[in-house]
Image (cartoon, rainbow, N blue to C red; front, top):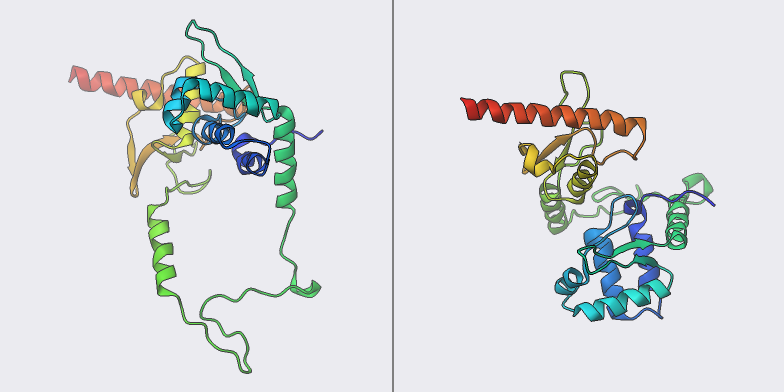
Length: 254
């Protein structure tokens, strides 16, 4: 059995299987969609909001949410570790079988490539290019479509890959800009809290970058636990927190 891909990379494949499952009713599907889109962990897909939180978000009673989760669990898409009445909420996680199927679909999809011209494929002409030197016509540019693309680019968050435009620390490490309020920030907050560190918002100052504000971090998302890369990231984050605290103390004294 091949290894699972991170949930963030197979989320669409995971949800597509449920959407096309005719045995799964709309209420169960809405609950599953909400968990996957709003609360799922970046790597594992695990989430743990209460029945009341889920119900308030989708307009259902907590008992209706509980019944819906039972159906999703019975269909084999999710395991539910039920909480107690002592403040411990239930935990929901995609089953290994569902993760495996979604990973396999993603890998199969990644293998699909356009057919080359030498094997019978045809190039896709761009707007405004000549389709043929004999009788072809120029395709006029679609101004409305171009404006939509420009607006989309202007409104999209700037998420540079590691090694692209970013800040460089004195020790030579590159930092990546992560916009405030997106799922990657929640991934960092959750991981840092596991190691006794507070959330980014409470410890680091937000920085402007283009049309957005956010944080300069060692990577877009935390590396896998127990990896050497994560240990290096943890050292960087602790150093950044110490510097931020020292700066706040200095301003307070001044």
